[in-house]
Length: 161
Image 1 (cartoon, rainbow, N blue to C red):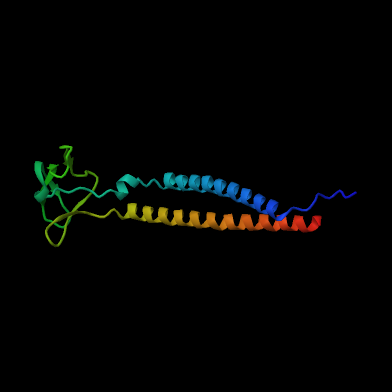
Image 2 (image 1 turned 90 degrees about the vertical axis):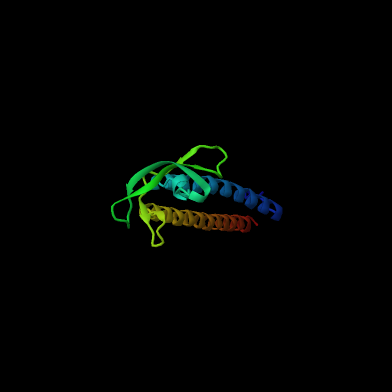
């Protein structure tokens, strides 16, 4: 009488590989997402602030309700700037205000712009690269784990015959 287990049929092999593939996929999905959220938390990037377009008063599409004198990069002395306004395209009717933490600059065309926050941009670029590396690493790891499992099952099957 043989003490070795009977060899696995093709359907049993494919069912085991498919089940293992599902477990690996779910595990890597949870693990990679946890890693991405940890990277987002560690980076300190505020996605809402980084991806939102800062508002400036547009005289053609609003009415200024509050003016303030501010120092503007690229202009001599103080410049009169609309601090609060009502935007006609906003149906809520709430007043919009100038972002206090952003630096205003005057462009060559005489219009005001927000000066770029390069440190925030670099952190956002680094976070994007980190996300791409985590996703690519997860896909590579999934392929490696499934391939090794298939080899292990096939070698087990050959030893048992």
